[in-house]
Length: 461
Ligand SMILES: Cc1ncc(COP(=O)(O)O)c(C=O)c1O
Image 1 (spheres, helix red, strand yellow):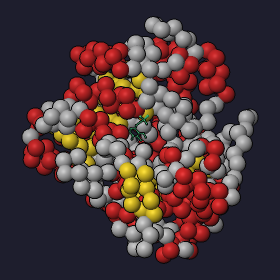
Image 2: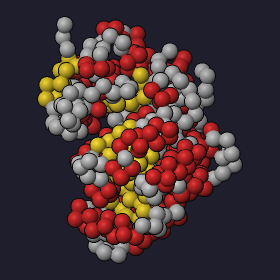
Image 3: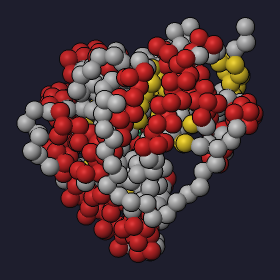
């Protein structure tokens, strides 16, 4: 074994029983779910790696916070505790809680984007792209080319291609760029980190052209840990100070707090100092989310979020968290299974294109592997490829994704080394019979974010 598993820096105080169906039962369930893993019941899943979002295990301090949550409609003490914690961690003046990340996108993007505008990002996550489009604008991805080669091991594969960013700004016109968005870590590129230097350089380009710069901050702490491990000059900087520096280069952030703040629900919108923008966001929050001091959340959620903001920065926890993924990746290396390497922060993104070279992009290799993982071991994962990307909003044509990944997103503080071994063993078993696996076709799809709801069927010869 090439790498040692880093033991959990916690012990277990409460357990949740999970059941294991037989292979025949799983085959029936996935057919009933029309081969869409979002249609499965959670109880029919053995290891749930659909997402690391909102699936985390809270600490005893957070559970104590549940009892302490102040449920006042206006002016709850939990709101002030959260705002102070977020101001302290990110260094921004204005903090608006919302119920999850896409709510922050909805509140903000409607103010900065519209028909004829563009959003440029290292990579837009699916809900981010959807909210750009719902606001009438178009989303352009601008990640460094190395991100497109899963085998190429470079330290900051999530970075923005800064030269290309500048040429895109010139091509589309600075006045037409509603926002530049830096997603940290870069989820769609495989949870790949972004360096401080790259954030700084992107910020300089934005300033030069007078464009607002936003961070999509879901995995701000995991990104900071990678910076500490990999970026020269940051080895002795604390996680908190790294985060402060990264955020100092942007004007605002949207954040799904269901990831690095280790809670089950929540989101934040942060604005550095633009009071006018904050006032406008407050108005939209009241319309879409609820009053400003709860933003679609219960007082107990605000309280847990305030605690989680600090717990997520703990270096022992982050070392174990990233270590768990590195252990899984090392097992895949031994078995010759390709993935977005080096492994990212919140999951292993297996290269389904390389596992199933006989399945074309429009028969969805990433989805085919996700279905096989469920059949093989009751593991629920998801496609991050052409199936997720969907159709061109203008032509309706199926888009061809840069990658065809199957994402095994690992919830925080939930699974043990034995579960991780089940994941590796399942992938190895599928690799051995890879040539027999077939692609899928879509039999029904909704117009937007289709992967959540679409029905599929296996392509029979
Ligand atoms: C990078 C990124 N941005 C935005 C979101 C949307 O957040 P939420 O699911 O909380 O609405 C996610 C969630 O998966 C994400 O990973």
